[in-house]
Length: 506
Ligand code: NAD
Image (cartoon, rainbow, N blue to C red; front, side, top):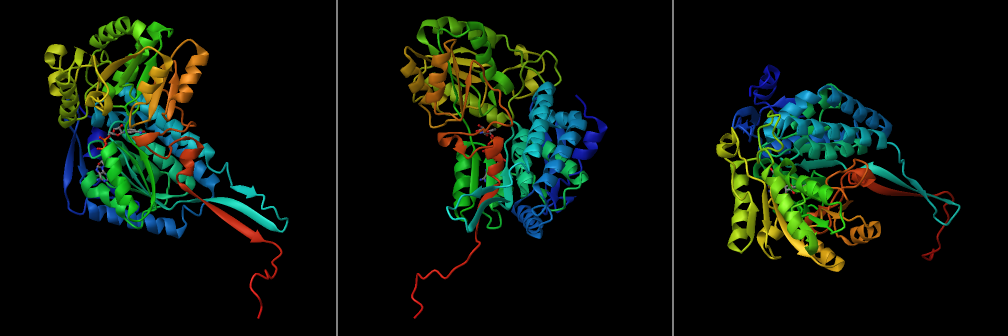
């Protein structure tokens, strides 16, 4: 695989911190090499920002916000801008998709689909901006004019993960800009390239300097200060549970608004009356798309006892046939894990399950060239199905974030619901049944932020996304996703002021 020339030029300069409308090197002068997880090839060289860079970025965002240059524009103007961003992303889709693929190792066709979703997100918030100019409140007094105005929160810090780098950033950038906020984005240190390209697009379309800022660096060095800093009004974080807890604790010191999109251990509940082939096929998608590195992955199959043996046999047969490969291998059906460290973590969950008595039905190890040409070069792990599990095993309760699915069984509807809800998380879940009443009943009882009936994984920019329980705080997408970046202000005007008489005049 060789990089197109313009990609080399764009991503090998090292000056990738974007502050106050200019790309600059990290203050320390340090850089980081980005490697493709599927091949090990170095695909970019980026600046390694640290706390001082983040402080400069926060200062730029603060000053832009306080100047009113963006925060004081009309919501309609901001919406128009977002629609232009969508158009420009559509023009540069292939370049963005390539950068995403090289950083993440995901198949190029998946990166193109991600780009379609990103463009749709900008279009949605572009159209939503300005739709709601606040509301009049009936104060119960004809001499009072009372209204609610929605104002931008201020400076937003955005911290994003490596699995869907630009998509997760888009879910924050689009509503933040629609609301009138300024922001500092810190992408995952392993996958910064599309965030860098995004700054280019915002800049070339004329977003005022300082409204959008980017620090490419690690969480500990560049990220932690974003949650702590008193000049940041909101921190919106997408990532793992343990980091999310740290971000929330750091943000508590200045009581800033916190939005958390964390992990999941998502149940896929399959009743015996489900369409068998569709349920197996979607269970495979739910668990193994992007090699399971999806927050909403259907990592826990909860299947009715009467069909469990047949269901699992078929799942295993199909999982064994999944073809792993690099981003440009047209035969490949899924790709590499993000890093050697992450592969070791995924494998540790599998090994812990085995040690606790679970049975690996297929997979359960890293893939090598013996499993497919070229797999030794990347961080590939075989699709893994595990049964004979029990609650309490870490492979059942904790997020492995890899191609690992466990199978639990139930006999009654109540039992299915109890198993599905037996998690500290609550991000997503699915129910499969051809009995529409039962499907709705179970969907109502699942304590998860998204519930699919007879499907797995689709989401809509116009529908809220987020978690119950320890899957997070707040919602992205939909009108609520815009609301995260707004403060509701009550303006109360007395049209006929009078002496109150509350205190005596003596
Ligand atoms: P992570 O928590 O390791 O890192 C996420 C981000 O936090 C990165 O940018 C990282 O540099 C930064 N970070 C690390 N330590 C920090 C600190 N102390 N202060 C501030 N920032 C810090 O997560 P990850 O491994 O990049 O991503 C995978 C996780 O993301 C999974 O748990 C997955 O479920 C979750 N995720 C959730 C959603 C959702 O919508 N709920 C979407 C995608 C991913």
